[in-house]
Length: 400
Ligand code: ATP
Image 1 (cartoon, rainbow, N blue to C red):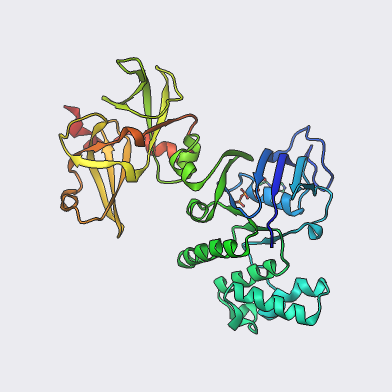
Image 2: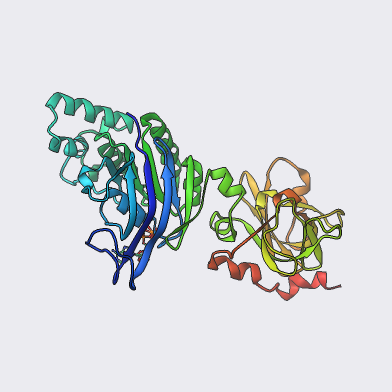
């Protein structure tokens, strides 16, 4: 069936004093905690869209507002163009899948899936055929007679999905649905969920704090911070062109280095000072000469070269740690400034990798097209790692 579009305009939810808890829309003055802060978002029909952000950034509240479990303090929620603010949850053409599957323990898988349909008063034949199709969709036909306690976590989540899909919602809201599963199962179900969404063709709005989940499954995603949307884009756009240091940091494994900005000798673009080294970027620099800023580079773009290799954007470093990860090797480098830099090298048979032992002096090449200067600050958790002073032993070789 056709999917549903979601449009949020100025959506705000304030809890506590001055909020609209239990009341209607409007208001917005006074104290209280703003969980969702003036969000504008358009998710077209049939899109797999994720809200990504750390705990407490307002993802679940946004989802609950769309589902109708919370009332907005201000703003509008349009489903397929119609304002649903005053429509109760069960009359909105959306359904929700939660992290805790919330299955009825004494009902079989079949009856759990059939539950909503029995209330919709469909004929017995239609019920059987729709439940059968929904179980088939999630590859659970063989488990129809089992109770939840006789199913694994992943199987229970499949039943919860079937139960939501059997009602043919235009929009499926998913709140960390894989959160309770182990890492291996999450990986499998991630692929299955995306395939399922493509098969049923309805809109999926997926909430997660797991950047890998959001990047692998979504057509587009929004990164949230303190109730606001910081950036919306495709996974590739958000990963490769983060809007600011917070997004780069949250998207994981980014090297964030504090640099001071100066003018290049030809005056055309900015040069970046990282300790004694001068770096150039082929991207626009949002900071002015004289300012300090954060430069970001992904570990897979850092090249580890022999010590003494010459050319622009090469900085001296010491190998601090080498971690074999199977398909790749993670090399932690310590720069003369004390900053650490992570390189991710594919294990492609290159024999020079074997010589990368702890304490080896090298040069790290940071290609200009891979180096971006970003506005803003990284999420607090990463700041100490960047600013940490170098241990005396590691810094010493650069001293002279
Ligand atoms: P998580 O990933 O931990 O579920 P989240 O991004 O989904 O986090 P929300 O659950 O939307 O975050 O919460 C956003 C903020 O609103 C948090 O600071 C939370 O404490 C607060 N909040 C959520 N629900 C309520 C409530 N019913 N009353 C008061 N404050 C609330």
